[in-house]
Length: 186
Length: 144
Picture 1 (cartoon, each protein chain N blue to C red):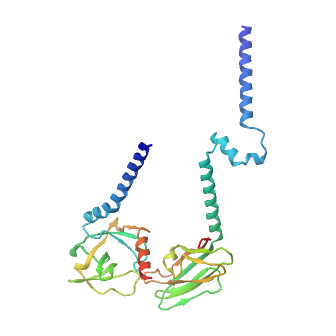
Picture 2: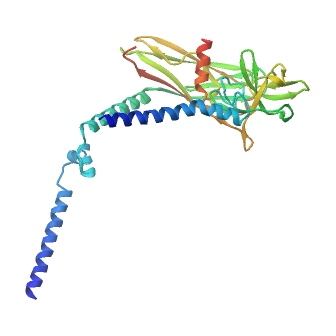
Picture 3: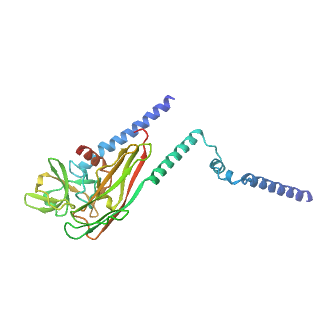
C-alpha cells in the first residue's frame, strides 16, 4: 500500500515536472524585440519554418503593400460638390473654398475647375485621376492617365455639366483622387 | 514527368474550353433566349443618366410594336451605331425617343429600326455596372 502511494506521488511529481517543462518551453523569457520578431511569432504559432519561396512571396507582398500605401498617402485628395438649382442659365460659384466646389448650377449650365499637378522630383510620375461618389458621373476631364516628367506642370480641367435629369436642390458630392505613381521607366 | 505535363495541358484545355464557351456561347444563348440579334449593349454616353450610367452593360430583349410603351428604354439602330433612349412618343409609324439627360427629343425612327428594349426584373432595368467599360474605352480611342 505504501509502495503504491509512493508510486502515485512520484507520478504526480513527474507530471508536475513535465508541465513545468512545457510552460517554460512555451513561455521563454524573451525581451520585447524577440517577442515582436515576426519570424519568431510565425514559428511559435505555425510551428513550421518558412520555405525560401514563402519568404520571397512575403517580401513581394510587403513591398507591393508599402508601394500602394505610399501612392494612396501621396495622392491629392479633393472633396467635390455641386448643387442643382431651379431656373435657366443660373450659375453660382464659391471661388474661395479649398474643395472642388462647382457651386450652384441650373440644368444645362456648366462650371470648370482646375487642378494643377507638378512634378518636383527626378522620377517621372504616371498621373491618374479617379472620381468617386454621385458627382463622378457629372465630372468630365480631358486629360487622364498621362506621364509627368521631371519639372513638368500640367493643369487638369474638370467640367461639370448639369443634365436635364438632375434633381433640383440636390447636392451631388464625391471625392477626386489624383494619384501620382512613380514611373522611372517612362 | 510526362504525366504531369499531360495533366497540365489537360487542365489548360478544360479552362480554355470553359472560357471560350462562355465568351462565344453566352451571347448566342442570350440571343436565342431574348429573341434579338443584339442581346447586350454597353452604355457609352451619359445621355440616360442617372437611369443608366456610362460603362453599364444592359440586356436587350426583342419587342413587338404593339408591346412597346411610353417610358420603355429602347435600342434603335442608326448609321452611326445604336442609340439607347427612353420612348417619349408612340406614333402609328414611328417612335420618338429622348435621353433622360438630354433637353431635346431624338428625330422619329421607324419601328423596324428598333432592335429591342431593356430587360427588367421587378420593374427595374437590369444593368451590370462597369461591364461595358471596354466599349467605352474603345469608343474614346476611336474618337481621339
